[in-house]
Length: 329
Ligand SMILES: NC(=O)c1ccc[n+]([C@@H]2O[C@H](COP(=O)([O-])OP(=O)(O)OC[C@H]3O[C@@H](n4cnc5c(N)ncnc54)[C@H](OP(=O)(O)O)[C@@H]3O)[C@@H](O)[C@H]2O)c1
Image (cartoon, rainbow, N blue to C red; front, side):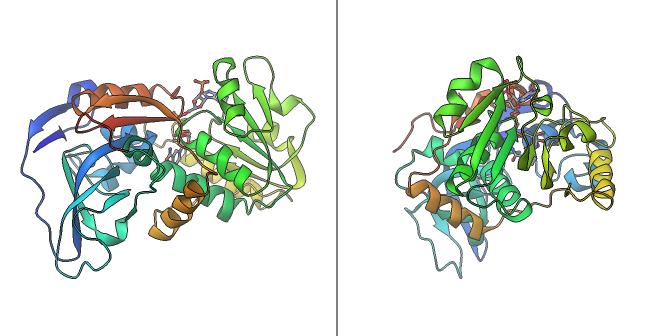
């Protein structure tokens, strides 16, 4: 099968290449999926670059643990191993696996759920790490309730576009912060108010929020706290600012320390992917409350360019890889 292969860390276009590799074997409890589409999130870019360096033991030393990068997939079940009871060949699924940027990918059955019928494979591939992280941050960290005022800083990216829609689905009054070119898009996905960061600084507006999801970290902690209600919560979620060695570890430690002395909560985020959350998300999608925003689509051979684009930090929604060259409804 064709797959994108990575044997060392570096710039996507320098270290990724399209190669012929063996199709994964299906072991007991596993599902082999013919991948129709995969999506790229910021974590894919970080893994290809191998940054921050402190994460290298987790990524793999001296080279990535998985030769094929990519996690989020949408496709059709090709084969199932012994003890797989919930899925069968021919089922259309979405989920996570190691090695999504390939024609076939394999993982245990608890990594997949059935694809919502109202999404194309390209749209469905966008659900995954970004949508489930947004869900966990708003529901579990922020405990966002109907009627609360929520601000999403970085509302136009892969995670932000899901966060705006999920916060709206929870009944919050949502303010999205983005640049001029994305104002209409962020409003179209449900934001009640949109702040164009090129014209206005939300920390100086005097408006206060019950929950701020900060995907950008372009303000100091005291500046952002000014925009919280006395009992509000700031969730700093930026994973890309900070140095090559330690990334955002410093921000996480500062937030955790500050929250011990402030009435406002400033918790670090704890995230993990699980199938129950995929079911919550597909329910919201089928109810018409979430529709993925697609920045653009690349062929499998264009994966290095797609990852490079995401790494620049200005994606507009989610970047998708169309693996077999045709979108299936
Ligand atoms: N995606 C995930 O699954 C995930 C999981 C955990 C943590 N994170 C972290 O969450 C952050 C956001 O992730 P993402 O997937 O949404 O990133 P992304 O797809 O790269 O989007 C970043 C967005 O931030 C906007 N932006 C840039 N500068 C801004 C500013 N000064 N004010 C407001 N918006 C600004 C960009 O819009 P413009 O082009 O208009 O500037 C862009 O749409 C990253 O730091 C990432 O490490 C992501």
